[in-house]
Image 1 (cartoon, rainbow over the protein chains, first blue to last red):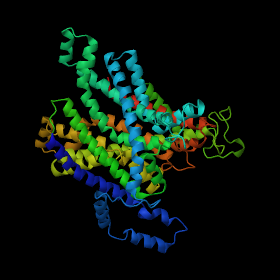
Image 2 (image 1 turned 45 degrees about the horizontal axis):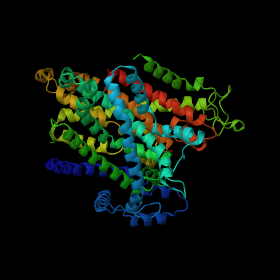
Image 3 (image 1 turned 90 degrees about the horizontal axis):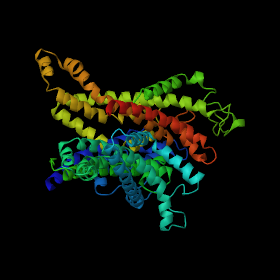
Image 4 (image 1 turned 135 degrees about the vertical axis):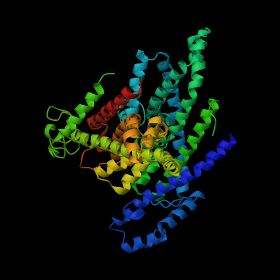
Length: 316
Length: 257
């Protein structure tokens, strides 16, 4: 187990290296480079741009720039924001709790939706409930996240006035109830989209297990169907599903960007869109590197979880 | 399931192709006397904040969405088949290098990556197709590589080699046709994903730029007036949903039984 973790960590190093090259190349492939936005600004004189270019080291060879950026990044020096001059590390640390809160709550909610619906659909495969859930799941997978957010805002905030349309707390206020009321819609959007695919995946995994001899044998021994379903089948179907849940981390990152922007949730996702609007490339690169590293880590964790739940799988 | 989704897609495609003929108004025709009109007999889906007909804009937006969805999936499929095929066929160091690259691309979240690329490059629609395609080849590459590796050990491939078939012939006549069915699902999924990505990019103002109409940028404009003109947000969103659902239903038909 420990050897596996060490090996995965070592494998992750070249992977992150390649990712960092992709991210770096992307920002520098823009016409005019990272300073492109100043080039079109009539208030910035050409000699200022030249000075900035030298100050930021953009006149050095590309590989040298990459190397010093990477070296600084690894040491935790993520540079200073192009838009407000504050340290990128601090700006990210400020926004992290809001995102963690939103993502954790929506994952829990998504599992709470996906597990019972997935089991019920597998138990009566092809039945009415299965087909309805299948249709709901296809809708969830096909739904543009941002539009679903707009719909909820129109219905629950503007139409019925039940929930606040955006933000994390009411300015000035901010007790627990207020906080929860703000969290409901963004978490629901993120949860529904995930639950749709996880529920279908659990169904498939359950059906696989239910056709295996040991569940048939359990039933033949007179164990009630419900117990076979919930104890024998579910326990064995859970492994692949948990693996998928963790593999979907990349989707959650994209989902958080969209959801946070629609609901003005002050987390990393809205920091990303703000940075994008200002072409704040130091912040953008740090956010992209961070989320990619998180995804790589979760993929490794997913292998561990899968193996822990299924002893037939060896960690290699 | 029935052939419903396929027919629906065919209708959408026909409506998109015929948009200049069937649309009741020009999509960029401004009518300041009829701004923000709710749906009526003259404007079935109402008008937007510049008095442009929403039906006409939705029909023209369909051209963008479907073109981006289909063509970006084609780009993604072609690059995925090329990269996965080379990796699976060559094996060894080439395989290892290409697959590490694939892993790296899979670990970068797709939408944020595309948002940065689109914000920096300010792409035209053909550029957008290429960008979205280049962000979506990894799944196909993995499937094709796996297929090539298993097929490569089969007897008929070996006997073709023994009979003197070159690399090109082995790949084109023996491996690709037998691996093709395996990538159908990943390429069809790429169509729906391409449509969703285009709409998301345009929604964030970095995809298709106004005044050209796309479903995503119509929603971007609708966001400011959800309370007073809800039809502006409902119509394009329903269009996206119907399209992606039909594509995904086609996938279901081929993959789940």
